[in-house]
Structure formats: C-alpha cells, structure tokens
Length: 316
Image 1: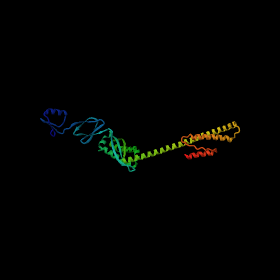
Image 2 (image 1 turned 30 degrees about the vertical axis):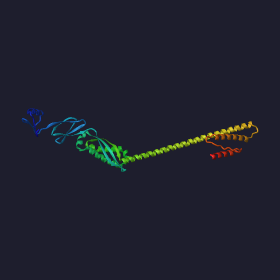
Image 3 (image 1 turned 60 degrees about the horizontal axis):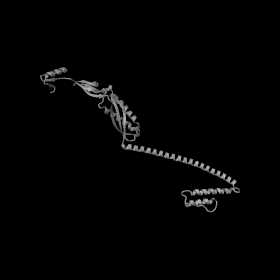
Image 4 (image 1 turned 90 degrees about the vertical axis):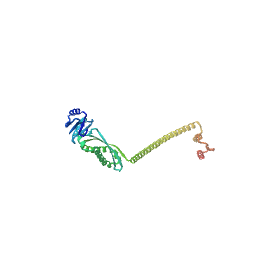
C-alpha cells in the first residue's frame, strides 16, 4: 500500500474482486489500483445486555442492538457501548459525628442504565461514577454530623434511604436508575472502638455484680427463713418432749405414792432428781472431749451440782 494505491501481481484478478465489492471511484492500471473517495463496510459485534452507539460524521445516528452489526467507514463510527447489567459502586466517606468522633462509612450503590434513556446516559455525563460519588459525599456529610456515634449505628437504614432518594432524584434525569443504596460498613477509629468495648464491658460487669448480690441476698433470706422454721420446729419438739417428760413424771409419782406407803411427795421428787442427776453425769462423762468431771462429795441441794459443773468448765 502506497498512500491511496494498492499494487498486485495479477491486476486482472484484483479488478474482478473489486468489481464484486461494488466499490466506487476505482481506477485500474496494469499493476496498480488507485482508490479515490472510497467508502467500505466494517463489521462489529455487540454482546447480550449491551447496546452500541453509532455516529455518522460526528453526529448521533442510531443504536446498535446485540449481535453482528455493520457501519460504513469512514463516514460512520461505533463510538461506544453501554451495558444494561446492574453495576455497583463502593464509596468510602470519612466524616465526623455530633460528638466529634471521626468515622469512615462505606456506601454501596447499585445502579442500572434505563433502556429508554440510552442517549442521555451516554451523552449527558462524562463520568457517571464520579457524579454518583459526589452526591454520596454530599448526603453523608450533611446527615452524619447531626447524629451521635451510637445513633449512627441505629440509623443505618435512614441514611441509606436518604442516599437513595437523593441519587434517584438526580440520576434519573441522566438515564440512570438507582436500584439500592446500602451502608455496608461503619468504622470509627480503633481507640474509639476500644473505649466503646470497655464501656460495654463495665456495664456488663456491673450488671453481673448486681445479679450476684441479688442471688446472695436470696440465699441469706432463704437461709434465715429455713433457720427460723428449723428453730420453730425444734422448739415445738422440745415443748412436746418436756410435756411428755412431765406427764411421765406425774404418772411415776402417782404410781410410787400408791405402791409405797408412808412416802411424801418431797421424797419422791428427791428420788427423781437424783435419777436425773446420775443420767446427766453419765451423759457428760460420755463426751469425747470430757477428761475430768467434778462431782460434790457431800449431800446438798442442786446448787452444789451446778457449782461443780461451773468449776469443771473453768478448769477446761
């Protein structure tokens, strides 16, 4: 090829081929074919879920649908393609909250080109992703400074809805449909997160201590109630025991008075007290820790026995 001339070894064969193509303005020489003001077809393909934009002499002409297409070069040109697939744009926004805590929010926007607005989507915006990013920054930096850090985590749905409404209002005029806006991450400074964890841990520890104290209180109350009930039942048992002893002594005294003539009530009581005295001595002496028991040698009243027991306790 030399400028606008094509050289062949067999010019007749080339001549027949070019006549089949029906190309205009062709001059034939013996070994040279000269092209003047020639236009020729160019083929291209468009994938499924895409559309091609064709311009003729720099002006929009038509859309190319999926499949094989053809344009007339150099008058027509395939200037671009647009996809109808759902696209996602992730934007990181750093701003501060009402309580002056800096936080990084990650906003994910899912958008799609409207099939009826391909012309606007291609020619209205130079960089749609940059346009969407700018509006996300505007919304997030106007909403987050009005909320405290704890409220930001609770208002994720409200923030996402605000971003979606703002983008839908603006981008619909450019041929873009906003399908969803999501707040996928809220990341405050690491020191702030550590402080929040400490606060949460302290609250839980305080709650655990209160619950433990309440449990100890219940144990003490129930223990006191059980002890009171035990003492009451013990007192009832002792009262019944003493009543039984008195009834037995009454029966013994009555039987002894009838069986032994000439005995007075005092003699009978002395005999009973002496019997109980020996039972008490036997019980005290049978204890494991008892080494020595002091017993009065002379006959006397019950005070002597009480004094001997006091002396024995002092000796220990």
